[in-house]
Image (cartoon, rainbow, N blue to C red; front, side):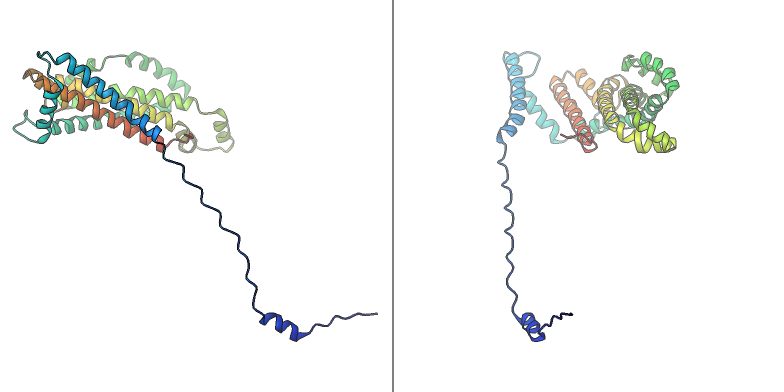
Length: 294
């Protein structure tokens, strides 16, 4: 027996023409409330440095309140206002504003530091990658690394016959070691599993360096760069005191010859601030390329 099911076409038409029932929408999730601003964290970041600086100025003022050859904080501040009112004046080759001296020193640091990075980072990769190179170069690094920066300055004067290249040479030879050592240590600490996978995949040496070693070693490289730029800025001040010309080191020595102690104190603060800014810049770069969770 065959059963058949018949549908009324008019009923289907009536169903299509009937208005659709509104669909109940799910309520939108409530936006999470913003956490309250952490005033205590801001206070702890700002208050301790301010108190430390105030303590330094207070002790300085107490020690100089009875007068003497050492200037007071107030006199030094007044001298700083006059000095930075026109930091880029020129009254001759040996009489220029502090701004030009800072720029000249930064230029020497940039050249010497750039050359050190161009040589030191690849050398660190080679030392860390190949045991033969490590055994050959490590004794030389251990021998030359502890040498005082100013001991290299006469060698530069002898070779280059000029003060400016000699100062750049001194920065180069003194700032290269942290980059070499830190890069080599980073390469040696790359997990062996990474290199075993590279051998299985038969990757070329260039791909091993660019795809495996470089991302893993980058934090070590940046640490070496930070240490090197601090050393370079430290060395240039001492080198310029001996070589003369334009530069913050020569400016300090020239102010000492003029018995202008106020300008020497100002230069100390300027040197420290510039070094601090360089350090902060490199820390920001290191955080940008760091893969570690904060």
